[in-house]
Length: 265
Image (cartoon, rainbow, N blue to C red; front, top):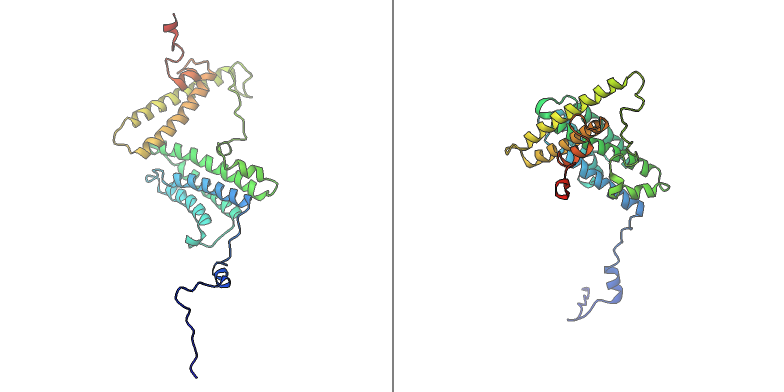
């Protein structure tokens, strides 16, 4: 006997039971706040590592290789389905990242000549990556008691370099010098720092005026110049501005002290 197959009539609708069965796909669980914040913080860290890997380190191939490795560690952690490497935990990945950062630092120490500005800018970024990775490791390892720390790491205030280290006030040379240094010796050291910073600052300005330099190099040179100016400003201000100028001159320019005084007279 042939099986009788009854086809639904034209225009017939699914029964409620079948409709319910069709839409009963499992809903993935919503991530907890800690999981969401952890992912956001790792994405911030990955962005910093990508910036490092894209720095113009071609003339320092060993440093470039280590910088790319930093970026790879975070990429594999955030994209396990696209990674060919064995998967490791978040805390282990952060430890591995910090080791790659130290390796990159070691490679940058060999920089000389034209590679110095790029090395300076890359070193500043490495300091930020290492500090952020350290704080993130502590925040994740201490959960749930460190949830507030994890929240802070997803804000601008939380990712500022050395955010938990207040900047000490600039000490004048009239105060007691460190053991083994006289006031005159300390002053000479600061004079040397201020003079060298001024020379490097002028060199970086000349390099930025070169129209052949790429936009990425211009950004790196600008970062290196900002660091140089900060060093020179700290040394010059401690000397009372006797060498290149005080902190205001370094920061706002040579005419800042007289700005507006002529108009008011």
